[in-house]
Length: 218
Image 1 (cartoon, rainbow, N blue to C red):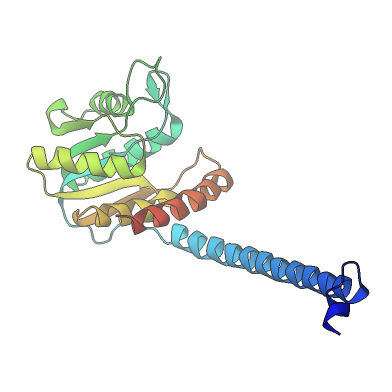
Image 2: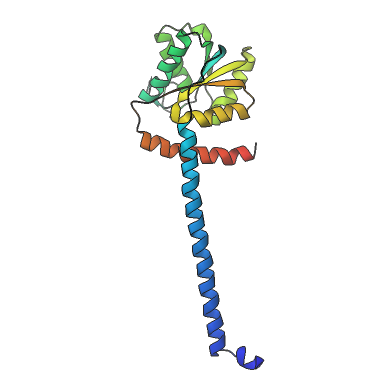
């Protein structure tokens, strides 16, 4: 009997082989479906988190408003970055903070100004004294924005901050600030009228997912 079952080319062996292949395919298919469903659920969770970001209210006066960088358009801040700057100006004029930390490195090698320098020039042109603006001009990501800005704050004796960005970016920015040890960080977020939310919120879902994975290693 044993010889018959294991004989090369015999029918029972072929049947066992087909059953194993079918079972493997079912396992792979079920695993794929589970991953797809889990992915959709995660995207929904992240989307809700992204939409939950709001400006801190009531806001306690802070030492600095940390403006997170965004792309430059040549020598000028992009329309999206101008929205962050204009909102920061509103908060500054309302007394929310007394100093600025503008954060962002060089977008393109051929550009004349870093994001930080472009923001400084914009703020000065809108009446902010140069002496209350500190630059962080090396960062290339949200994590680096906040990490390097914290170093600048420590060097200048500033201990509390309002993190300023767009609403779709606020949740990740605030979580990052807390993880980096900011002292009771507050959040200032503005809506965008110049950017496609379909594009930027879709990108933020991926960026937030990457951040949560990065957070595990911190």
